Image (cartoon, rainbow, N blue to C red):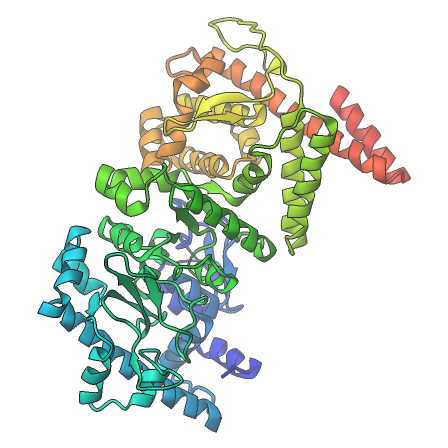
Length: 602
């Protein structure tokens, strides 16, 4: 059943967006707007506004925007229909009358829900009966206690072809709905028989927590290892995510959701405190499942096993997501050390190891770049042209033109850096070992990522890190450089978020203290970025950024680095103008190129 525009407009009119938002955000009136801390990203200074007259909210920090229905969906991880139903109930607004066919389907669905719930209770009972001893032993060996078994409603289907059928028939449930619910198999000839036999049972629920199907894990060498319910009026394997109902609230609280490969991975993560974990049902992520993940968070983290199969699953998910990307909607990828999965990693090294893996999750753009350059020789012009063509073909799959354009620009920049001739660094130390000449930087620098992993970074990213490290270690620099630091946007999103938080905190602080600033930033979740910034790798390139260095030396070094940082931007603009001129010899394009060249030489 759909909702007419008239009905939705009436709902928005009846429900005050300020009252709905106010249940989750503490709002303070400022003129005609209400102001508060954004519930969709971590911030200390309010940038989230709500306007009751216009009926919308907007965050100037993260760009979140929408009406009361959108807020209810995003704040609580609800689907559109669920959000409308909840708000309609609060407003005393009756939902549109269903057609007879819709009413009949709803009655049948309710009956199937009851059948599946009865089966779930029976499977749970059998797990602790003599017939379920092998299943219970398997779960115990996997480290699950009674609390975890009860939380996920795990059960066991006994061996034999008639156990489930006979048990549910005795409860007065007819055979027809048992077949329709996928619990019994109807052969061409002979009696019906149980679908799940000799398996540990994992109930699968919809968004509202209602059982809609089951996954069964075989014991021993029986095949297939995992068996799911067939497609039914309630169960569609490609649309559902395991643990979605339990993960929704946790995902809204955490601001993200983690997708892993299997049931046991989800259970292990939940028991370790990562309650915002879900899993597809034994298949590659589908478009419908990606849509479910995006209902929970703008950038879900995909964390597949650290083996070849896990990497293939990550690559398939990246390819499937490309046409669906939109501004602010993407994916991140966390890489487990081979051959670990989340369950084994947590058992071996604890929850902290898993937290570090998730904190190092890389954006989709990094994975796509890696997919194309990994194992590809680039020693001839033809091979470099092949890489360029492959990247163009990837980008063409992105439907949104704005996102497509930014991917094109990013890949061009990476290719320029990759193909630029490598030069040996020549140092030119000045007062206090201030800084080697950044104009003679090699194309890329090897730094630590904060987790002990060596990564290559461009001169641009290195300078962004140096600029921030100097200000964090010398907060009084802000009086001299704050306006310019606030007027740029760093290319690295995480580093740019850190830049904004530094400016917010120092802008409102009465005492500019480096230690206090660092403690504040770590409390905001920037520990990993700080471990990278405030380390010997960065200081090796910029001694002036170290704590305790004379203020005049730190200021001089910052100014030199910022000048070179702007020149790098100018050089990028000139190169892009050259490329555009090659394909468009118009007067306007030529004049822009000349203007940029003059600025570059100024």
